[in-house]
Length: 160
Image: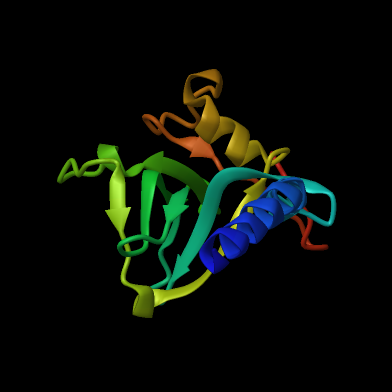
């Protein structure tokens, strides 16, 4: 008989606690969603799915950064530096698939060779160009290259 009393107590406790547990799960889910939204937004700025990665050898890459099982960029683009006819340094970005050796669009990165990484904002001209590369005109005869925003002396970037 003691088993039935104990069993009845457990059943009654489960029936009474179920709404509290359900409410707790809903609150935790809400907090998780809110936290995810906050992570996607830094100081109220919407971030794109694209990141920029600086490497120890000076290379700069753009793409969708993932960390598992190792750091890699999908839909990867490389910053290209070149000198124009006037001898001025110019920058553009080009998909890594257009490289001479024709790699896939995923670039695997050595964690020890990464200096820094940062997410691009949604209003970045590069993020918009990566999201819709066909909308950007080709620049300076450089096939499949997108002009990178150039920094003025105050450090602000503008697309010239």
